[in-house]
Image (cartoon, rainbow, N blue to C red):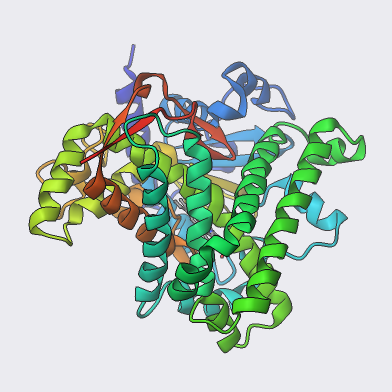
Length: 472
Ligand code: HEM
């Protein structure tokens, strides 16, 4: 019998040969798991642990079927892809207005309440217009103002920890949600204003953190249900979801109104958007969605970073040692990269390509849903030596720890013109907070062995982390 690795090697080689000879196979030949018509493998997914295990379930499918397979997700046929080179081919064909899918429950909510939303929900010319403005403000040029804002917010987090040293930090998740919202509000109004007024804003930030935290729980509970039916029959899950979104949008708009009426003219993002003449209505939509988009992604990524450095204490010691001689040590950046490779909070990226595209040697018809398995590519043996090990130095140029690492094999923020607009904010806040944590504390974890990676809209630790911050 052929081993799994041999089968994978043959599949990969077959892809390359077909691509080189220019003879693509038909869509119907794309490998497919056995499943019931219509529901596809939904039942196998439930048996494998439900949506919480989706990334691992799809990873298992890739191990069996190779870098490409197709499967029914409910009534839709999707193509799953895990090879980084083939993903690059998808982004190369995504065109001027890349299309990604949005959670059905959110689309129904937006439709029901006539809710216009920010960048993630925009499409076509409208998306491109506002995306260009936001690229200029958040991804290009001098971004030292972002560092300044992250500095204030990460210091607030350190102060929270200082009040809880030598004992388990209670409600780590809540503290991290609060920290992620401190960052985004500080970005909106600028460092000086946030430094001066954060105490006054505290109840609003706490309220935001709580309501946004809840929305992600209720959205993930909608994952396996057909949202339209759940709404039509007013199932309790739908009702909880609808209420939580009302509350979260309500508190985000309340915060925005407060910031605009008091601090609209400061040196933060709000003032920069006004300067770029973003109309009030669109400014509100975009900013509210930045607030919502920042919450869970950064809170759980930071949780994974704390998990990683407490599980690998030698990494903590090394960061501290390197910081003494080089404040700009690449190790901070590489710890963040390595954490996001192993624990990407968004383990899948989606695209719908408006023309036929050849992937792994198969012709994929226009408008097919393509799901890129970032969790699987980030743990690919082809690109990462000892893929399941946490080795931050593998990202060093000319690293002996890993000579064949390539950027596109780990895409936590996506790729191309529709990649994450909050990437620089997130990277800056992680590095800055990590630096401050390591400079002030030695972090221990009491339950590392019990922590699994589960999906609840984003991938997160299965249990609250039991972290102890020892002052140094
Ligand atoms: C670890 C942190 C984060 C991760 C891993 C992450 C991941 C992603 C990914 C993968 C996408 C691309 C989706 C696609 O290609 O279709 C995306 C888009 C987006 N992200 Fe993030 N994100 C993070 C933090 C943030 C933050 C801090 C903000 C807000 C300040 C934010 C706001 C957005 C928005 C608005 C979009 C939609 C962009 C568009 O459609 O043009 N994200 N994010």
